[in-house]
Image 1 (cartoon, helix red, strand yellow):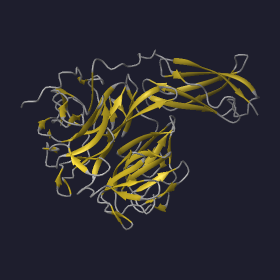
Image 2 (image 1 turned 90 degrees about the vertical axis):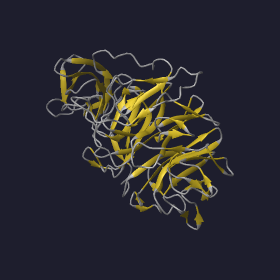
Image 3 (image 1 turned 180 degrees about the vertical axis):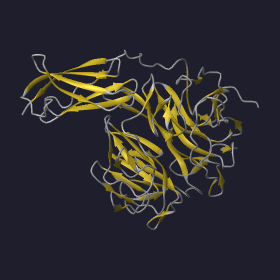
Length: 472
């Protein structure tokens, strides 16, 4: 098998950021979330039960040093992620997070998962932000108990709303281009307006984009002033496009011969786009792009296709004590998500090797080493108590490096122990404990300053959480 060399003007290459661990199952989406206490984290969503050997069901975070879960367990596959107003949103096939019913969509505020109203009546496949609102798309027909007129709705932070006359089918891809919301899916119209699998919402109504597509897109993106659509569609009118096309505002055009070839019985398709280093990264399940041999991922500079090493290839059966991979939903193997993180490109999906080396469904592409934060000291990393001063209760946020039970001890100004709060064993990552302003006898303590100390694990690792002030 012969692969074309990478471009001579680039020293970029595939690397193993994740120290040979990766993710134990399919990854369907990636995003970058800045936690107010713990910094920039790479979030992965998909169908897996662990990352880097750490238990983490369906959503996990890489903090630059190690993997950890995010609060309560999401109980089902997560298909999509979005970040909006300091919150992380996840949508998918899940209906429960922890013990709470959320119905296919939830938000994480850095501490806990919460529902968005009563959620949807079917799965959520794509998320984006448009004109200050969160837009959700999928197979649902109701959101917050209200009919949505198709699989798309907007969330303003309080309630769900339809978008005009809606769409007469499911929606699988969303993006924003030239001030309009672009959606693609199994729909053919909005009200009396024909759309053919793709349409633009201008804030007042839906509008067609030329003749539309002969099948839906999975990926949409803006690049050099044009809209790009990728999926498994083959034609636009009489124009053969083979899985990828671009719209200049007037007409559709092909990208040479498009994509072709696959590693299984599925049709070749594009799953995701990302603009990186001045080029459009095209991720999917295919073996050729513009006639160029590749491995599920290539670069497009607006004129020509270029390879990225030998690409990323589907996994082979694992032997012995290697990582157990969860059997995914019935979709083709390949690269499902790409995202820039700390100046490098992260690629994730269902693949087992990168440039001929073993990989576990995630890898990074770039020049040199990826800058990562220094390894934290062997102690609890603590953020400021919230709120402070407080009336009824105060919450302490902290980051655990490994599974552990945690205790919170409260002292008065004379150094006497007033109260102690104990947790059950908690997973690595962001966690919290709350003091309700009561002493060990269950009595309200007097207003004034108190000092708090956190301790985790059997080895007694501790951190000083500082001073809090109780006001009545």
